[in-house]
Length: 110
Image (cartoon, rainbow, N blue to C red; front, top):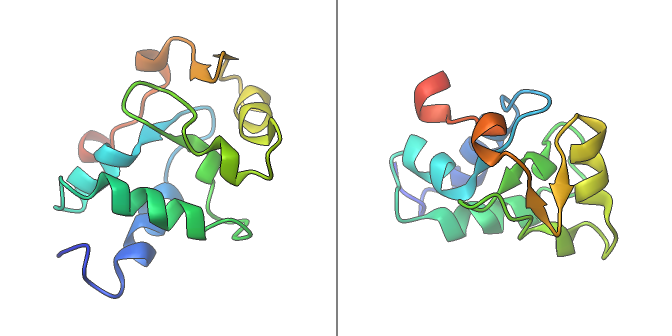
């Protein structure tokens, strides 16, 4: 599988749909799981295109350090942070607090 696969975005969404409530994963973890470890940026592009897809919890995908790098795709509001906090994930200065505890790795879980 490659990030040039026309169905790559759909495969990304399939993984993101499985991220449990109250957990987060990273763009890179999704890319590694899909066998395209160097495609974290393409996973980010997929997440950017997912807004409006209510069944894709894009707010649960953060960067490898737990930063809410995709927050600007949530209408310029604090919506991404609010959605995470509604699930019990504390965020301070756009970073997930206790990231390792909330981290979900599809390579280990799926």
